[in-house]
Amino acid sequence: MVTAGDFPGAYRTLTAVFRVMRIVKLFPGAVPVVLWDGHAAWRKDLCPEYKENRKDTPEKRAVADAWRQQQPWASALLMQMGVTQMRSHDAEADDLAGRLCMDRSALEEYGVGHVTMVSGDTDWWQAISERVDWFTPITDKAMTLEMLGTDAAKDGPYLGPDEYLLAKAIAGDSSDNIPGVPGVGIATAAKLLRLHGGLEGIQQAVDSGTAKDKKSLAVASMLETIVRNRLIMDWKMSPPAKESASILRLSFDAEECRALCAEFGLGRLSDRLVEDSEWAAANSEQQERVTQVINYCEAVA
Image (cartoon, rainbow, N blue to C red):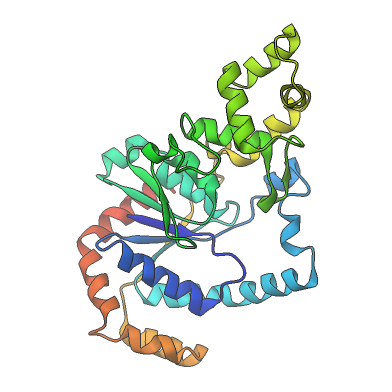
């Protein structure tokens, strides 16, 4: 199974659909599940500046507004293409990815052998495990549990997903406008965590005078910010879902796809969605696993 989602605002309907089609080609036989962002207001309550950088210029606001208008088109077209989609009004795509990827007992129970998370967001590394890896379509790079412990991981290596996430909580996340400890990057944070045995170890080392370096002192002085950042970033700490996410899927319908392409002015795409197209063949190959994946999505939604 492949999970994909969190399309940045710069992508329009055509690009979003082409990206899903490319992912299906790269992972033959996998069942794609597109995850859509809802509004997780609790994150803004914790950090009012959260993602404010996404609309801090007229150009960024124009991009976001354009995508907001076209997102329903992309969703409608993907539905007629036979692509499973998940959305929840009070959860982000990240939260849905957490539900899909971090319930190991459910993965086992429903026979989901492997999940590839498709996103440009390295926050998703927190869900990497023996059954779950990560792939970014931006640079076509992958990340696995084994690779996370090597120099293949940016600013790594890391002892595991938990260490990476805590290091990021210390450093902050400029892409989401989450401030961290000034002057402490992810690589330095990971080294300090390893040196002192975790966040509490850093605090104890500073309190005892064992650690006198500026970086350790800075981390110890901002524990409240770090704890807040972890609450925002850590999917395991997300509030319980108030309601289940919606699962959307129809069978592939070539005629409806072509009609939508004509309505949206997507002639370039229309020829790729006919009955004997490469997409139709790929869709047919997925069918025996689709019910299994939908049942799984419904169970964890």
